[in-house]
Amino acid sequence: MSIRLFSPVVLFLLLVFLIGPFLIIIAASLSAGDTLAFPPQGLSLRWVMKVFTIESFRDSFAMSMFLAVFGTLAALVLGIPAAYALSRYRLPAAETVRTIVSLPIIVPGIIVGLALLRYLVVPFGFNITLTLFFAHAALVLPYAVRVVSASLDNLRSDIEEAAVLLGSSRLGAFFRVVMPNIRGGILAAFILGFVTSFNQVPVSLFLSGPGVRTLPIDMLGYMETTYDPSIAALSALLAFLSIGIVFLAERFLGFSRYV
Image (cartoon, rainbow, N blue to C red; front, side):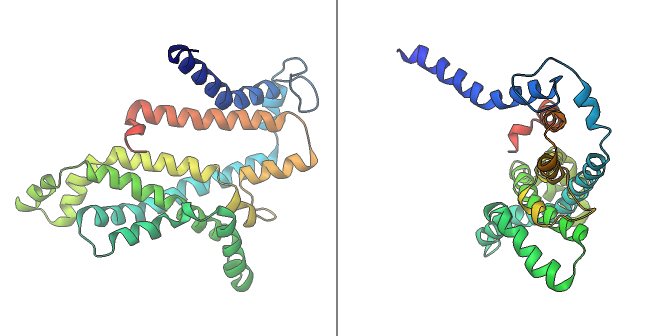
C-alpha cells in the first residue's frame, strides 16, 4: 500500500475510533425501547425529553454549573496575577513555582479527592460543598495560569512600559493596557476551566454525599439502579454542550492559539 493511500486510511480509522462511541451514544439515546441498547429499538425522542423531568439531574446540573462557573472564576482571580508575575518578572524559583501550580493536573484526581476527604472533611468537618468548590478551583488553576501566561508571552511588554512612562500607575497600566489585550486568553482559560470542572469525576466522587452531587456522579448513581436510554440521552446532550462551547471558542477566540 502506497503512502498516499495509507495516510487517508489511517486518518479514517482514527476518526472512527474517536467519533464512533459518540455516534453510538447518540443512536442509543434515540432508542424507542425501554433499555439501553445498540442498535436502537426504533427511534424516539421520549428519553431525551425524560432527562428534563428527572429532579436529581436538575439539582446535580445546578451544582455542576455552580462549581464550574464560580470555581473557574476563583481560579482566574488567583491565576491571572500568578501568570503575570511568572511572565513579567524573573523570579528565582520560577520553574519550581510552575511545577507546583501544575500539581493538581499531575497528581491523579482520585488521590486529591481522597486526601481532601481524609484530612479536611473527616477530621475538621469541612462543608462538602465548600470543599468541592476549593477542589474544583484548584483543579482548573493550572489551566488558568498556563493559558494566561501564553497570552502574556505574546503581548509586548513595552506597551505596558509606555503606559507607565506616560503617567499611569503599574496597576492602572495592567487594567487599562494588559487586560484588554489578553481578554481572549482569559476567556479561553475560562472555557477550558469550565469544561474541565463540569466533567470532573474522580475528585467529585470522594466529595459527594446526600444532597451534594455533581452531574457526572449523579449519572453514575443513576446507572446503578436504572438502565434506560435516558442516561445515553443526557450523555449526548452534555457532549453537544461541550462541543458547542469549544466550537464557539475556536470560532470567535481562536481557542487553539492558547491550548
